[in-house]
Length: 247
Image 1 (cartoon, rainbow, N blue to C red):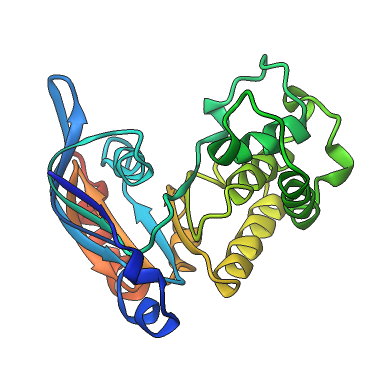
Image 2 (image 1 turned 120 degrees about the horizontal axis):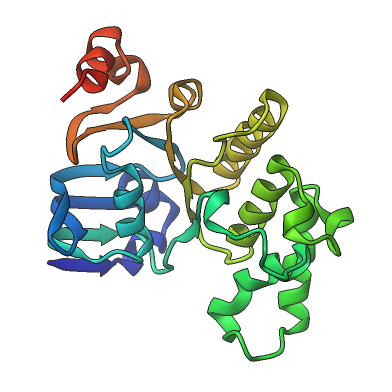
């Protein structure tokens, strides 16, 4: 198993435009006694939105966890075309309501990778937090507890935490699940703006409307890659029927 961060991939705009932001080959991963991903080979283009699509149990979240570095591959090659690790935004349900954290404290955690959890944030760190909170429209929520937020507000807080890491690769696990249509549209617009600003976005999603608005899709079933490419080519009626049919 090989994992590489390729600094040359981010040293030149011309190179970055050609080289994949992430490339993996023969990738396998899972949990003790339970393999989940089987021999996945794909590329994630830079400066795009890539949707990981598939039914429950297809391996979307596991693949996202491997890309985020929280799950170790068991075999295969994984290469990142940039020097910085990705920023990972978990599902809203993975962050407990009982945590005594304010919105600002939650976003500030995005700077811990630079400073460590016990060191005082610098003036630049605080300025970064201010900027991303303003961009996500949550400055007025700074003193609110996470458990007091609506679903959309909470999701924007978690995305702000991811952006505070200042990575050009943002990984999101089901960012629009359980949100109302207005909140889903707001998140979709934000992700499009991030790509325009130079961020590569990868999201695991059940939302076929979100997947169809992506630049590229990886379609998974039972931990195997069924198809990859533009949503119009991948998310066809026949392919979706094949993927969602009972095992």
